[in-house]
Image (tube, rainbow, N blue to C red; front, side, top):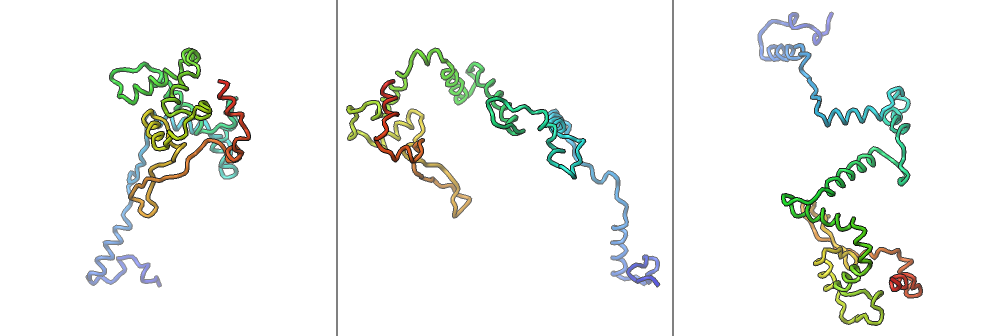
Amino acid sequence: MKHPSLLPFTDLPQEPSETTDSLADESKAIRKPQSSTAYSPKICYSEGCIHTASKLLSNMNQSVDPCQDFYRFTCGRFLEETVIPDDKSGQSSFSVISDQLEVQLRTIIEEPAKDSDIKPFRLAKNLYKVCMNKTQIELQGLDHMKSILKHLGGWPVLEGDSWDEGSFSWKGSVYKFRRYGYSVDYFLDFSVGVNLKNSTERVIEFDQASLGLSREYLAKGKKKNSFGDLFLRQ
């Protein structure tokens, strides 16, 4: 004898009730055949998607069994065909994309500045043009840099005994650095971060300055004058 739960609805008692009606409805819903087009995955056929898919396939070695060596299956041809540039110690798919991005950015920034460009773009293009004018840089030598240092309040390494320590104010120097567009991290490092007590808020974080040299160089005091002598000879 069949178990009652396995009997078809035609074998169940035909007395109408809310229970049997609901079971019949549920059975019909379960047994209803699903259409073959119920799930239609969305496939991207845009130029960018096709290009990306081709790059992924070109890096794969589909002759390798992924169950035996999944890494070689996905990246085998990349390992075999990629040549590490002479100026780099390694190469990855991310570094390749980064190199391509740098080329694109350089192409954009080398274009002549236009009146229709927004101000930050014009400034970036003009700055790049000035920095790449090596002929003019060589003609000016260090005079331009010395002039900037003088406007920022001077530098004891260059001024020597003429340096007036009493006229120095770190607050005034920070103001001058900001005014001329230079970093102030050498006096006081501050940034905007997330409030650890409330992640929906932002706070100003203060930290010690970054002097650019390791502690062992700074802790030796005035015993080593190589850096100062080098700048004075300039």
